[in-house]
Amino acid sequence: MDRTTEIGLIKEILGLAEQKSAYLDEAIAHSPISRYASPERFERERAALFRRHPMIVAHSSEIEGPGAFLAKDFFGLPVLLARDEDGSVRAFLNVCRHRGAKLVRETHGCKRLFTCPYHAWTWTNGGALHRVPHEAQGFPELSRADRGLRRLPSAEAHGFIWIIANPDAGDMPDIGTWLGQLADDFNWLKMSEHRIAEVETLDIQANWKVLVEGGLEAYHFRVAHKNTIGPYFQDNLSTYRMFGPHIRSVLPRTSMPDVQTAPEDTWEIRRDANLLYTLVTNSQLLVQQDHIMWFHFEPMAADHTRVRIATLAPRSFPDTEEMRERWAKNQLITKTTLLEDFELGEEIQAGFASKGNPSHLFGRYEGALNRFNLVVEEILAN
Ligand code: FES
Ligand SMILES: [Fe+2]
Image (tube, protein in one colour):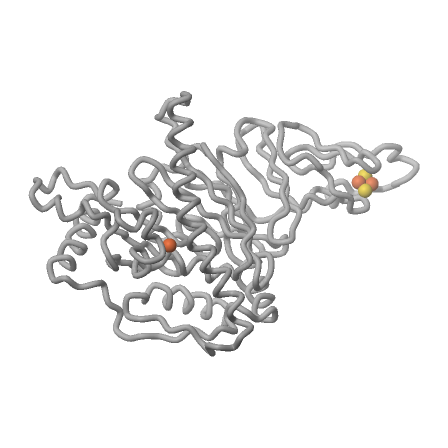
């Protein structure tokens, strides 16, 4: 984010606060509950959204150093990420090319060669078939080139590993192009110079979009979060902007109006507001004063989402006992707040069966929720 944008975003909030107005979209909108409750709709999202577009699968710090690997099931696919001796990360299906056993059973580690637990076929961490026991008699004329590990399109950018969860998806688009102008913000955030200090995974019985929507407005802050973060944020005040399919929201703290008495060159948006980046397809990045929270959504079913909550801490902070305690405390505050949202999300999901509402109503404060849903609709329509 350049300085002009940073000052502009602060001034936009100050202007709204001065007029005692919230940031208003033009009109209210309706969101049909079938978007959140229908298994058929969920399958369409899986095919058109989650299997066709880049998604973040890991932070670079989770797969650090030559030979590091990470194996996880993700969106129903067994995925193997491996960093080679030159530092490049590749993504493969974690499926043996002989008879389909799960090639790597460990979740992470460091290996140059992967040997299948069934008949010991072995691949390099670059995906090339390296050894086949008793090959000459059993597999005459085996084409090794045809038996490399199946690649998934992948890239490493802005401190994350991105994949398309489909081996037939073709080439990985350039992540800078995928992010558009948001790439400037991501350069500014230097997420490749962060590491995961805290991480935990929660299973929430709600549709992934209900959970994403929960972060896109400040209308609920003083109500749903009255006992946690609510008092630290301005009531019902936030702004947002679309960057292609992605959204950047600004959530000002109560301290923001104080900047008006200070020289403009001392203004810092991260001191007086949280920024929230909502990325299609499956991540939200909540930028706080000196660290970033990464919320990673793995939709499991129409009414079930696995959410990974991670604290990304700048590497410039020392890894001391004191800092570890601080990151743990921050993680707990964020998790406690999110659980307030997620409890509401689970209740909303449970209420769909009542058919009490044919659709949800988005007020003019909740325009970002509508825009987010329109992005998903547009992807499904194409
Ligand atoms: S299934 Fe992997 S070596 Fe046979
Ligand atoms: Fe919330």
